[in-house]
Image 1: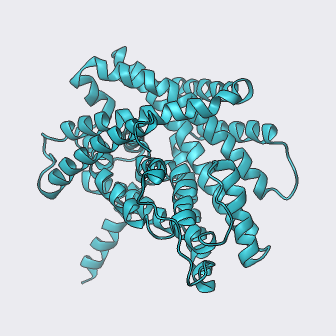
Image 2: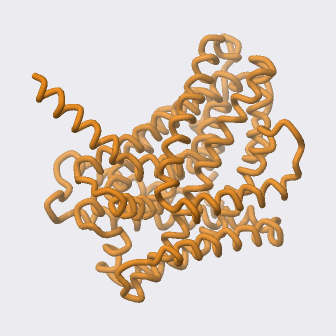
Image 3: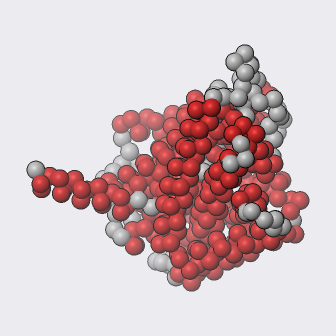
Length: 418
């Protein structure tokens, strides 16, 4: 009996030690898709889009999992696998990654700075906060490297989960603000298509996050060897947490904003301020810091993960093209510094172009999502842990979903419908 207990404790200790890449993936995902899109979905449509969020997470699950699965099985990143499929895939990813890294790093850094302004007890200009956020993030990544990022991401996810659940429990205890006879707008019409497309497309995150996750798995393995089973456990913990928190954030909007009689701001920066003010008006001034703190932890975690992920991905492409075995730590640091510098240039000199560029980056993410999904699926069709059974068929359904969804998004963007 004692030996059995010791074995169980040892097994759980090993699994907990393996946690890291999946948690970091969750931290990267819980940004605009959760804090803004999920909460707005609840604020505008109540609980009507809950099933859409569940299905989006379900259909994308295989392709996110395959990023970790392939790396744990083969000991190399997804980009190594893409190279075996053809050099054109690496070139295509590198070019899109260079564009999206600058735009997304600029966007999340600026958003993080604005959210920080809600937390601070004194006024600081947003440009100063933006530079501060970038400097702090860069120092954490350059000086602490993956080990510190791993530790911080766990603290961020734990803190975020506890704080968000507390906020929702309090909101539930007070009851929804919507009158009992209130009938909200229906999302099942062409006018709401654009919103639903964006909600599903970035839920839980853009597909390139799977590539970041595979690189984090490699980085984690260099610190401490991780078994295949423990690595999949880590991924599942991160992904399931992400999916559940999407519903929790939906509840934030549904309970406090839905039916409150105030038009919901769609612009991300304006919406966060509106969400905080709605909580204050409903629960009192004490709630201001709680919701602002949730928003800050959410976006700061995303900022760290995005900067690290895009920087590693660019460098990994170059490593593969130059046929090198490993990247030097100094090269990783240089890639991070260059990416954040380009992001700052975008913010301060091309701020007016940030919106159109972000929309362009989003479109590219949608267009390439089925391609990345198919590549990830094809890489796990062989080997000891090849995909079979229910996961295989869920992948087929997921591919159909992603292809149809991407076509719908493109058609909507060009104004053919909606």
